[in-house]
Image (cartoon, rainbow, N blue to C red; front, top):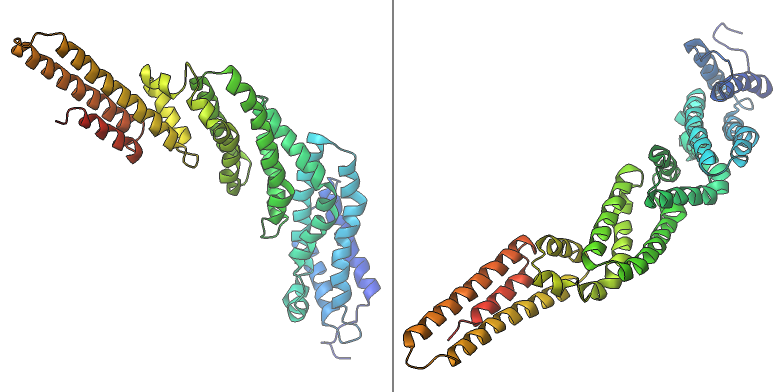
Amino acid sequence: MTTHERKTVDLEEGWAFMQKGITKLKNILEGKPEPQFSSEDYMMLYTTIYNMCTQKPPHDYSQQLYDKYRESFEEYISSMVLPSLREKHDEFMLRELVKRWSNHKVMVRWLSRFFHYLDRYFISRRSLPALREVGLSCFRDLVYQEIKGKVKSAVISLIDQEREGEQIDRALLKNVLDIFVEIGLGSMECYENDFEDFLLKDTADYYSIKAQTWIVEDSCPDYMLKAEECLKREKERVAHYLHSSSEPKLLEKVQHELLTQYASQLLEKEHSGCHALLRDDKVEDLSRMYRLFSRITRGLEPVSQIFKQHVTNEGTALVKQAEDAASNKKPEKKDIVGMQEQVFVRKIIELHDKYVAYVTDCFQGHTLFHKVCQIICLFVSP
């Protein structure tokens, strides 16, 4: 035996040494008093795996070590992680889940370093899942699959509490929802199927109930203020803890329940709808109406029709006023008739300027409303 030959490490002996290192890591994760890994500890564990994978057959234990790597996670999850989660509920469960997922990622990072030689050769040659993927999928299959329903319900319950004005821990929700994203290992499937679909349904139900009350109790301006505030708050939710891909879907649900479903009722409210806002020169409310109704499909068309009707009525009233004034004057007073025509033209120009300003300021120069102003010019056409 030359000095270059090394002693063969059998599976039982080598794995007993590895288990000491894995137990030390588990103790650190559980917060037990345990010194951190030194560089010497790490090298000895790495070298043990290296030696056990590079021995001549039948002492190449690569496959067995690959299996034991997975079993290490499965054993830890079954004995420590799942019991700690099963005994907690609601927000306490969410906090425990965030802690356990964070610890699990640390465990994956360390064990995949110890077993790194497997990744470099054995795994790549056999086209097997990489160590990191194996470690994370253990959590997905054993922990996530068991508690995802309870987690989803707890998160949505907190979101609804926030919608009702309560303070919630947004950072906690962000951390929990990051798990739904990360557990997909590059796919958004878990986040979308196990959480987002349920959130969107809950959002629709929540705002449907709100809208049924508000449409009866509130004036059009008050309803629009609430709708705008709801949209703003939902955008904030995305910014604080939901995934950015949820924003268009979430806002579409809110818009549908608050605006699309009640668009005509809102516009035609007797004392506060679009007609009343135009009559009373409620510029700020009209601007809000434009902002909200421009969000929904063909939402501006009925607004522009009411605007057209209002402008036509005002122009027609000026024409009738001028005709009545002219019919009451004697024919010989031509200079008075000429003055009346000047007054009429001036009033039409003022009407035109007023509503051009509306189109620019309230309706952001939209072509549907620009066309309406052209109608005013017809009143002075010969």
